[in-house]
Image (cartoon, rainbow, N blue to C red; front, side):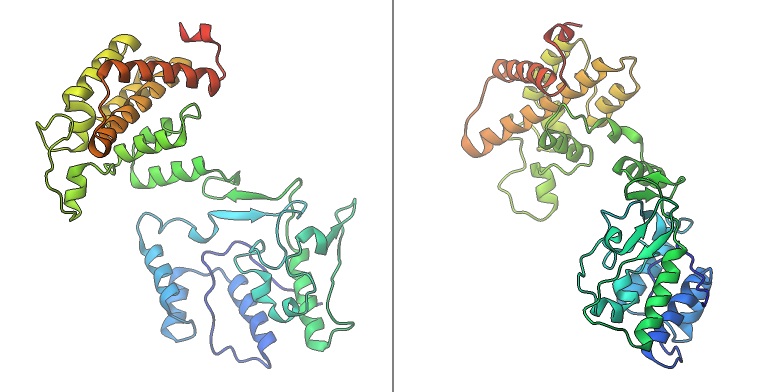
Length: 360
């Protein structure tokens, strides 16, 4: 049997190679796969092949080139940061998902895929492993026998699969940037923050005690993406006035609405006295989050502080919208009482803490 050398980790998605002089289309595709995966492709080789006209240089390929030239990702294996590692194969589609290299088998072996009777079959339905990890194949074609070309194609496919290193357990996504760790959004976010030099302040945003819509508002506030009047005006939206609707003293930017407006300052003053934490002189969301992150308070109390800050911001925004669109304005006493009661409710229902713990 012919040996097919496969490198399962490729750098980028393989573009189509043109002018591969072989006897037929199927052999051309096999030679394409051998050429790409049997060679360690570098960016210089890609550009050399493109200059010879052997690689289609369309829009997608141009975008890939631009991504690779980005200094933030140039040193990273962009095509294999997130990989599918197959275990029992019950959660991965055999033909449609790219689990062997970066090309799905339905694209690499289109003739076999066309005669597959169950195109959404999983790997476990096609590859059977016994106790000794010996592999047998269970094909279900929609024809009784295969001609010579299809038989050769099936033989190539089986040889490739026999070289795959199956893991024990279930199928997982692997994050390959810092070792073969199981993929999580936290690992991806940490890598993005590290590449862009971002401070890890956002790590304390996603507190499960707080509803997602409230956390998203805090997140947008930290990115200067809350639709206050100044932000809307800077995007070309015609407004009658940029003045803060709550006090009419200054233009409504984010720092004014949430921290300098008399209503906001009074709320922060009362909340600071109640929580025993000085939020009045922070002046911005970044200062508040930094003080929570770097403060001496840890564990349960730090989460309580984040919860109180999140709902205070939500209450100010909710009060502003009620006055702007409904002409309904609540007193400061009502707002502060609501912040206290809602924080207590979230701790007990979402944080699963007893009421006695709140007193600590």
